[in-house]
Every structure is written in structure tokens, then in C-alpha cells.
Image 1: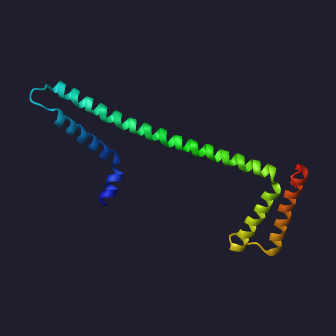
Image 2 (image 1 turned 120 degrees about the vertical axis):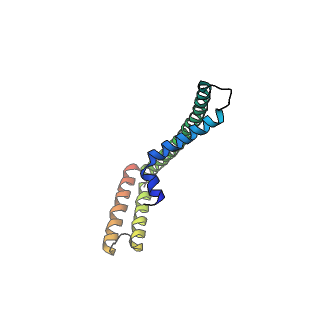
Image 3 (image 1 turned 90 degrees about the vertical axis):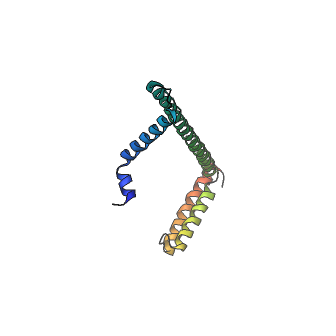
Length: 140
């Protein structure tokens, strides 16, 4: 077992050891000859509170930033969906032509195995649906 596997399998012990070392460092920095044990303990507590508060503040700011970014991305995708929905409603024959183009490109590149008859059938159906919807809406 190498060192990395040992550390990852015992991560809780490693975290506890790190916390103990930090507390020992805080106690070392707070210790002076004229201070009592309770004063050193109060100083270590104050340092720990500042360290934990700073870490929690950083994590909360990071979380708010990430969630704000995800919210903005979601709103942008929603706006894109609304624009595409309007395009589909207002220009169904354009959308059917795009579908035929995508299917043709996928068939030519080999992504979707299509014979010529299958492609022609898909094209007729897609363009027919787009034309019928366009005629009913008055956009064709």
C-alpha cells in the first residue's frame, strides 16, 4: 500500500491530525510565561474561531458565487429555449428543413446508418409536417 492509498483510506484520521497540529501551533503562538492556562486556552479559542469563521465565510462566498453562476446559466438557457420555441412556432417549415439537413448530415457522416429510401422518406415526412403546420398557421 503506497502513501496516497494510506492517506485516502484514513482521511478522517489525517484530518484530525491536521486539526491537532493547528491547535498545537495556536497554543505555541499564544503561550507566554506570564499567561495562565486559561488565558492561553482563551487565546487558542479566539484564533480557532477566527480561522473557522474565515474558512466558513470563504466557503459560503464560494457557494453563493457558484449557485449564482448556475442560476444565470439556467436563466440564459431558459431564454434560449423561449427563442427557439418562438422560432418553431413562427417558422415550422424552417425547422423541418433544419431537421432534414441534420438527418442528411448524420447519414452522410455515418453516425446514423440510412439508406437513400429511408432518408427520402424522412425528408418527405418532415417537410410535409412543416408545410402543413405552416399552411395552418399562415406562415407558408
